[in-house]
Length: 261
Image (cartoon, rainbow, N blue to C red; front, side, top):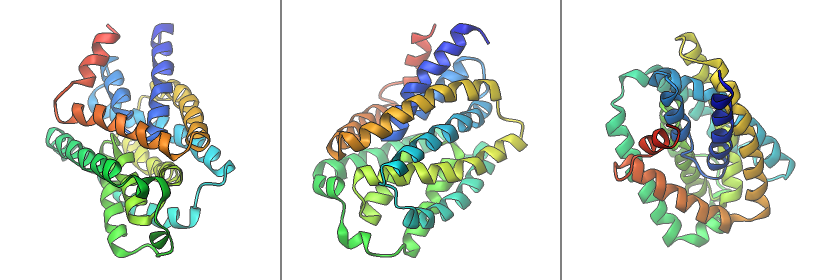
């Protein structure tokens, strides 16, 4: 790799790590960049998981140090997500991505509606839900979240945030902590599937991870010190941008390609 390629991978990784830790959707930048650098889509998809693991390991460490991570409920939600991720990674090549991307875009818009119309629920959480144990509906929901995360990863953070905030009653800061822990647990399983299929470019993945770690560290500190209102508006901005891409209103991949030409 040239120094230009290394620099681009690291700098872009900072933005991806920051976006993914506070909200989600940064993976589309990683996939676009990897494909621009010549990797086939399936290898770009597998390679991205290397940085995701290290990025979330950094975020989890910081959230844990600040004592905002509820491992007990997070682990119960993580189990079905992990099982789903294995399935999602295995069937990745069989799913029509174009249709799936549009479906995700619609879900993101719906999620933004709840953020805008029920801000108190996102900012403060719901004590009544916090006290309830994980139910079978949450298990099913997080299984399918895992299927999607194993398949493509892009935007999976929004699904997890919606499930943790609206379904389990956590505020956005604590929900983000649970989100990165769940992603950290299921991603190695998805990565293993891609490794077994020879779909990981380790040099690109590890260099990109350097930036991801930096971005994740910065974001996890901001999430706690700046509070849930900052996270809320950051999530809204990112949803608007990436939902627009998924619905075909703008083309982020084309923009990334244009910038680095």
